[in-house]
Image: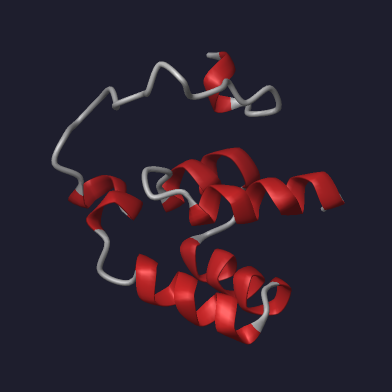
Length: 88
């Protein structure tokens, strides 16, 4: 895994609306593997903050989401150029 891919996985894991399913689709990592990667790559305090934030959050799990398709996108949000999913 390249440094760029690792940075992108961490960024996607921090995003509230990016599901673990999207990370699995794009990078092939299951939820438990993402958790292990975050534990390894982040400082302990950062990992604890992330874990507390993600635990129980329905938006991180595709099956628990309120909405089926589409998502809110702010007009000021920039496009992510290296995201395979956004290029569909």
